[in-house]
Length: 587
Image 1 (tube, one colour):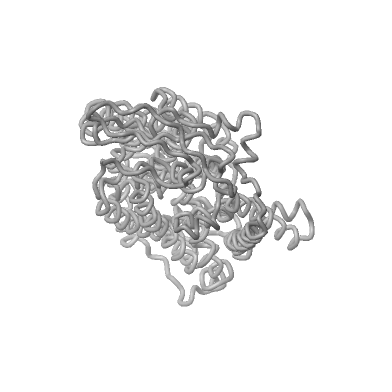
Image 2 (cartoon, rainbow, N blue to C red):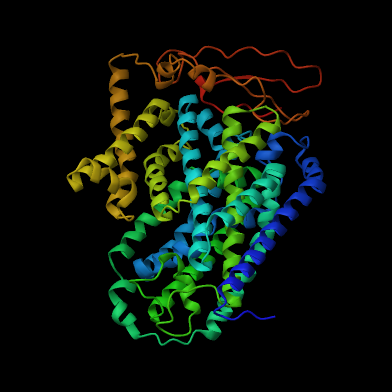
C-alpha cells in the first residue's frame, strides 16, 4: 500500500503510528530491562536494588561506551532538528560550525572537572553535594534552585519542540504527541531511574546515528540544486556576518554555563566506573554530538543556499526539512515522503532520550536536597508531578530559543564562581567564601539587567532585551560572563579589608539561619549521603549549619558526635559544613 503525496490524512496517521511505535518500543525496552536486569547492576554497584542511590546516580557502574552514548543522548534532543538549521540559515556558516562545536565542548569540560570533583569528594552524588561541601548550605540551595530552573526550561523546550513539529510539519494539533512522549518517558524513568535511562540512551543513540547516516546518504545522492559560488544573493546571510561572529563567543559561553547547571549531564560523571570510562565516554559523546549537530545544521544551510527556503514565509523550525524539496517554489515542507518520515522519527527519538535524561536530572537534584535517605517512592512521585505542568505549558508553543535565552543568561551569571570552587587551596577557601559567591552571582544578575536598561533607555524594554529579546547578541553575554569575575574581585577585596580592620561580619548562612524554616531546609541529614551500606562505606553525617559559617571569623565548633561503630565496621566520622572539607576516605 502506498500513500499519495497529497494525502495529508494518510501521512498524518502514518506519522503517529511510526512515531508512537518507536517511542513505545524504547519505553518497553527500558521497563523490561529495569525489571529483569537491574538486580545484576545493583550487585555490580554493591548497593541494594531499589535504593535511592541506584535510582538517581548508578554510582560507578557504567563503562566507556554506555557513558559515551548517554552523554550523546543527554546533550541532544528534538531541538537539534529545528534550532541547528535555523541558526545555520540566520547566522551563516560561522554560526553553523560554532553551534556544532559548542554543543560538544561542554561534555569534555564536565568530564574533566567532574573527575576532579569525584577524586576530591568521592561520595559526591550531585552538583549540590559538591557545592555544599565546598561552600555551604545556602550556596547549595541557591545552586539547586538555578539547576532546577535550568533543567525545567530545557525540558519545556523539548516538549515544545516535538509539539511544534507535529503542528507545523505533520499539520496536526500539538498536544497528543507531547502527552505521548511525556507519559512514556515518565513511565520508564519512574520505574527504573538513571540506570534505565542510560540503557535506553544506548539503544536510542544507535538508532539515531543509523537514521542520520541514512539521511546524509540520501541528501548526498538526491540533492541536485545548483549552489552559486560565494552564496549568490544570500552572501550577506550565509557568509561571515554579525551574528556569525557573535556566535564564536555566545554559543560556547551559553552552552558551557548552562551545562554546569544540568544534573542530567553530571549524572554521567557519577555513573562512570573509572577515569578511563569517563574520559573515553566524553570523547565518544563529543564526537557524535558535534557531527550530528553539524549535519542537521548543514542540511538547512544548503537548502537555503540552493534556494529551497522562502525566508519570508517558511517556518524556521522546518528549515532542515526543506532540503528534501525537489524544486524552488514547492511551498512549505510537509511530511509526504518516506525520508521525511524518517527524520520525524529521528526527532521524536532524540526528544524522548533528552526528556528521560532531564527528568532523571531533576529528580536527582530534588531528592538529594529534600528527600535524601527517604523511600524511593518519593523520587518516583517527583518525576510524575514535575512532568504534568510542563506538558501543559508546552502546548502554548512558546519560542524555544527565547526559553533557552532566559536560562542561558542566568547560568552565565552564576557558573564562574562554581567553577572556581574546584580550586580549594587554603588561599582560595579564605577569599572565595560562600557569601562572596552568592553575592557575586546576585549582583551579576542585576548588572546584566541594568546593562540592558542602559542600552535601551527604558526599564521594561531593557529587561525584556536582557532576558528574552537580545537574540544572543555578544555584548549581553560578555556582561553576563565577566560580571561575576569583576564582582568576585571587588567583594574579595572588601572582605579582606574588613578582616584587616578586625570586623567580624556574619556570613550569609548566619543570617539565613534566622529565617523561620531555613534551618529545616538546610538542616542536617540523619541519613547517609547515599543509601550505600556495607563494610567499605562510611556514613558521612552533615551537622546542621550554625553561626560558625566559614564566612565568619569565629572558630567552627566540633561537629555532633555520632554513635560508636559496631565491631568490625568502619568508623563514622562526623562532618560539619563549617570545615568545608570533603569527608575522609574510608580506612
